Amino acid sequence: MNDFYPSQVWKHCPYCGVRSFRASDKNLMKCDVCLKTYYINAAAAVACIIENPQGEILFTRRAFEPSKGMLDLPGGFIDLGETAENAVKREIKEELNLDAVSIQYVGSSPNRYLYGGIVYFTLDMGFKCLVTDFTDMQVADDVDGYVFLPHNRINMQDICFPSIRNILQIYIKHYTD
Image 1 (cartoon, rainbow, N blue to C red):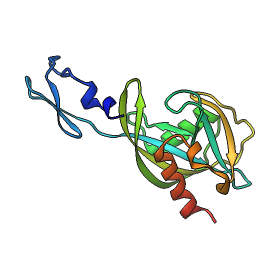
Image 2 (tube, helix red, strand yellow):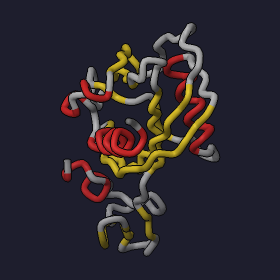
Image 3 (tube, rainbow, N blue to C red):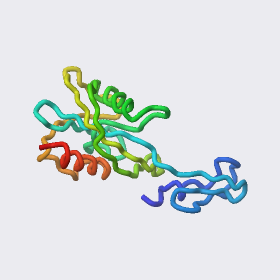
Image 4 (cartoon, rainbow, N blue to C red):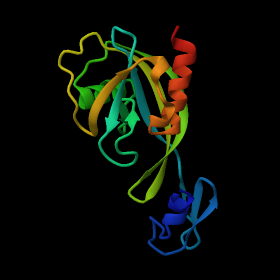
Protein backbone atom coordinates (compact mmCIF):
# COMPACT_ATOMS: atom_id res chain seq x y z
CA MET A 1 0.00 0.00 0.00
CA ASN A 2 2.98 2.33 0.54
CA ASP A 3 3.36 2.62 -3.26
CA PHE A 4 0.01 4.43 -3.31
CA TYR A 5 0.77 7.02 -0.63
CA PRO A 6 0.38 10.61 -1.88
CA SER A 7 4.14 11.16 -1.53
CA GLN A 8 4.72 8.35 -4.04
CA VAL A 9 1.90 9.29 -6.44
CA TRP A 10 2.01 13.09 -6.53
CA LYS A 11 5.01 14.31 -8.49
CA HIS A 12 3.79 17.68 -9.81
CA CYS A 13 3.35 20.71 -7.60
CA PRO A 14 -0.37 21.66 -7.34
CA TYR A 15 0.63 25.34 -7.15
CA CYS A 16 3.09 25.85 -10.04
CA GLY A 17 2.70 22.55 -11.93
CA VAL A 18 6.41 21.77 -12.08
CA ARG A 19 7.58 18.19 -11.51
CA SER A 20 9.46 19.11 -8.36
CA PHE A 21 7.11 17.98 -5.62
CA ARG A 22 8.70 15.82 -2.94
CA ALA A 23 7.99 14.52 0.53
CA SER A 24 9.93 16.28 3.24
CA ASP A 25 8.46 14.09 5.99
CA LYS A 26 5.55 11.65 6.38
CA ASN A 27 2.78 14.25 6.05
CA LEU A 28 4.43 17.23 4.36
CA MET A 29 5.31 17.75 0.71
CA LYS A 30 7.31 20.67 -0.69
CA CYS A 31 7.99 22.14 -4.10
CA ASP A 32 11.66 22.80 -4.86
CA VAL A 33 10.72 25.56 -7.34
CA CYS A 34 7.97 27.71 -5.78
CA LEU A 35 8.73 26.56 -2.21
CA LYS A 36 5.04 26.01 -1.39
CA THR A 37 4.13 23.24 1.02
CA TYR A 38 1.20 20.85 1.17
CA TYR A 39 0.19 18.96 4.30
CA ILE A 40 -1.30 15.49 4.03
CA ASN A 41 -3.90 15.26 6.80
CA ALA A 42 -6.48 12.68 7.76
CA ALA A 43 -9.99 12.90 6.34
CA ALA A 44 -12.78 12.53 8.90
CA ALA A 45 -15.28 9.68 8.62
CA VAL A 46 -18.05 8.20 10.76
CA ALA A 47 -19.02 4.61 11.56
CA CYS A 48 -22.46 3.95 13.02
CA ILE A 49 -23.23 1.11 15.43
CA ILE A 50 -26.94 0.35 15.39
CA GLU A 51 -28.57 -2.45 17.36
CA ASN A 52 -31.98 -3.96 16.73
CA PRO A 53 -34.34 -4.72 19.68
CA GLN A 54 -32.69 -8.16 20.06
CA GLY A 55 -29.30 -6.49 20.69
CA GLU A 56 -27.79 -7.54 17.35
CA ILE A 57 -25.49 -5.12 15.50
CA LEU A 58 -26.48 -3.95 12.01
CA PHE A 59 -23.75 -4.51 9.41
CA THR A 60 -23.83 -3.39 5.80
CA ARG A 61 -22.21 -5.23 2.91
CA ARG A 62 -19.95 -3.04 0.75
CA ALA A 63 -21.11 -2.68 -2.86
CA PHE A 64 -17.84 -1.27 -4.21
CA GLU A 65 -14.08 -1.39 -3.73
CA PRO A 66 -12.24 -1.06 -1.52
CA SER A 67 -13.27 -4.25 0.27
CA LYS A 68 -16.26 -4.97 -1.96
CA GLY A 69 -18.51 -7.63 -0.44
CA MET A 70 -17.10 -7.36 3.08
CA LEU A 71 -19.03 -6.31 6.17
CA ASP A 72 -18.92 -2.68 7.28
CA LEU A 73 -20.77 -0.38 9.61
CA PRO A 74 -23.06 2.22 8.07
CA GLY A 75 -21.18 5.47 7.63
CA GLY A 76 -18.78 7.36 5.43
CA PHE A 77 -16.82 10.54 4.95
CA ILE A 78 -17.85 13.77 6.65
CA ASP A 79 -18.70 16.47 4.10
CA LEU A 80 -16.97 19.86 4.16
CA GLY A 81 -18.60 22.09 6.77
CA GLU A 82 -20.58 19.19 8.26
CA THR A 83 -20.45 18.06 11.89
CA ALA A 84 -19.75 14.42 12.73
CA GLU A 85 -23.23 14.16 14.27
CA ASN A 86 -24.91 15.44 11.12
CA ALA A 87 -22.78 13.08 9.01
CA VAL A 88 -24.01 10.16 11.14
CA LYS A 89 -27.65 11.10 10.53
CA ARG A 90 -27.06 11.74 6.80
CA GLU A 91 -25.13 8.51 6.19
CA ILE A 92 -27.70 6.33 7.99
CA LYS A 93 -30.47 7.95 5.96
CA GLU A 94 -28.59 7.69 2.64
CA GLU A 95 -27.46 4.09 3.07
CA LEU A 96 -30.40 2.50 4.90
CA ASN A 97 -33.30 5.00 4.91
CA LEU A 98 -33.25 4.98 8.71
CA ASP A 99 -33.48 7.84 11.21
CA ALA A 100 -31.18 8.00 14.24
CA VAL A 101 -33.04 9.33 17.29
CA SER A 102 -29.94 9.55 19.48
CA ILE A 103 -26.18 9.43 18.95
CA GLN A 104 -23.38 8.68 21.42
CA TYR A 105 -19.65 8.85 20.68
CA VAL A 106 -17.84 5.52 21.19
CA GLY A 107 -14.24 6.06 20.05
CA SER A 108 -12.00 6.56 17.05
CA SER A 109 -9.36 4.76 15.03
CA PRO A 110 -7.04 5.82 12.19
CA ASN A 111 -7.30 4.02 8.87
CA ARG A 112 -5.74 3.86 5.42
CA TYR A 113 -8.28 3.80 2.58
CA LEU A 114 -6.98 2.86 -0.90
CA TYR A 115 -9.24 4.35 -3.56
CA GLY A 116 -8.54 5.29 -7.16
CA GLY A 117 -4.85 4.48 -6.92
CA ILE A 118 -4.10 6.67 -3.92
CA VAL A 119 -4.16 6.08 -0.17
CA TYR A 120 -6.40 8.37 1.84
CA PHE A 121 -5.61 8.60 5.53
CA THR A 122 -8.78 8.76 7.62
CA LEU A 123 -9.80 9.17 11.21
CA ASP A 124 -12.88 7.01 11.66
CA MET A 125 -15.13 8.03 14.54
CA GLY A 126 -17.57 5.47 15.92
CA PHE A 127 -21.00 6.37 17.23
CA LYS A 128 -23.66 4.27 18.95
CA CYS A 129 -26.94 5.20 17.27
CA LEU A 130 -30.45 4.46 18.42
CA VAL A 131 -32.94 3.65 15.69
CA THR A 132 -36.46 2.86 16.90
CA ASP A 133 -38.17 2.04 13.59
CA PHE A 134 -36.67 -0.37 11.04
CA THR A 135 -39.91 -0.61 9.00
CA ASP A 136 -38.72 1.39 5.98
CA MET A 137 -35.13 0.09 5.94
CA GLN A 138 -33.75 -0.38 2.44
CA VAL A 139 -30.22 -0.40 1.06
CA ALA A 140 -28.96 2.39 -1.21
CA ASP A 141 -25.85 4.44 -2.00
CA ASP A 142 -22.76 2.19 -1.66
CA VAL A 143 -24.48 -0.61 0.28
CA ASP A 144 -25.23 -3.99 -1.32
CA GLY A 145 -27.02 -5.62 1.60
CA TYR A 146 -27.22 -5.88 5.38
CA VAL A 147 -27.17 -8.40 8.18
CA PHE A 148 -27.77 -8.28 11.95
CA LEU A 149 -25.25 -10.19 14.05
CA PRO A 150 -25.10 -10.82 17.81
CA HIS A 151 -21.91 -9.56 19.49
CA ASN A 152 -20.61 -13.08 20.09
CA ARG A 153 -21.05 -14.15 16.42
CA ILE A 154 -19.03 -11.38 14.77
CA ASN A 155 -16.04 -12.72 12.84
CA MET A 156 -13.62 -9.79 12.80
CA GLN A 157 -11.96 -11.22 9.66
CA ASP A 158 -15.21 -10.49 7.77
CA ILE A 159 -15.02 -6.79 8.70
CA CYS A 160 -13.66 -4.53 5.96
CA PHE A 161 -11.12 -2.26 7.67
CA PRO A 162 -8.88 -2.40 10.77
CA SER A 163 -10.41 0.86 12.02
CA ILE A 164 -13.92 -0.60 11.95
CA ARG A 165 -12.70 -3.71 13.80
CA ASN A 166 -11.07 -1.43 16.42
CA ILE A 167 -14.25 0.62 16.88
CA LEU A 168 -16.31 -2.58 17.24
CA GLN A 169 -13.91 -3.92 19.86
CA ILE A 170 -14.17 -0.66 21.84
CA TYR A 171 -17.95 -0.84 21.62
CA ILE A 172 -18.21 -4.50 22.64
CA LYS A 173 -15.80 -3.99 25.56
CA HIS A 174 -17.36 -0.81 26.99
CA TYR A 175 -20.97 -0.64 25.79
CA THR A 176 -22.34 -4.18 25.93
CA ASP A 177 -23.12 -6.57 28.77
